[in-house]
Length: 321
Image 1: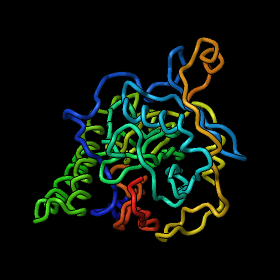
Image 2 (image 1 turned 60 degrees about the vertical axis):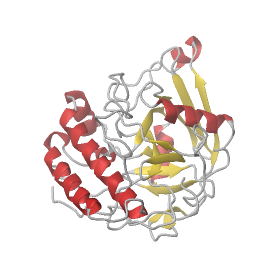
Image 3 (image 1 turned 180 degrees about the vertical axis):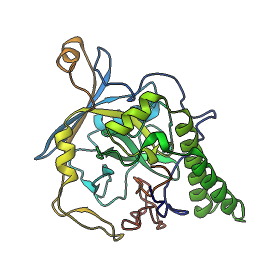
């Protein structure tokens, strides 16, 4: 596959390195294996008005703060009535912005209103994965769901050294900056962490993970830069329908804003009991070099392009979301 322009200043990424303390590296099954719903599992139901309900199994063992935050926000009714404000077919849909335009929103799991990434080898950006959008490795309220079900690359042919080289080049640019407290430094540092994580995740990918990316689809270049905290197991028709809505241009010039509002009716999070587990038992989730991919991003005052040449944007606002 021909290499596209990947961003020196694009993907807003990780706040932790895959191999260090602070990232969750438990070998607990996430979404690499077939999703089955068992008694005691945590499930989210996301109702999209006029479209239906997306059901997802959440991963509290892999991303505990992310699941807790999502649960607290759901219980508070935060998401009810908010928009799916960003749709990129072949990548993801994104919602949970307080102001409906990619701005606003405060995490409830931490007094600061934001929290760090939780990156895990077993929680990947397969088709139907649910993750948090972030700014420079800080999560708040915005979430995305991967809508790409067509394998974009042959995962077995990805070269981790290509991403290590990118991490090294961005690190050199970062280290040349005098102001280590600047937004630019934070952005570059996040990119270094993302590509370092991605390098490690490609290197450590099991045959099961490689096969799933090559059959079920997803957005593997998001791995290592975002907190994946759940996996859709029912409601893929809803995800697919939203991926095909008519789009206009958002405030940053990206062709990703639905021309008709897509409203989140409600979000419910609950523990599965024996009866509900039985009813869901049969549901499951259904390149050779780096390629460009847009990033699920939250709001920040500064404007930074994503890696997609035709979709260069980051929503702007006063609050990280």
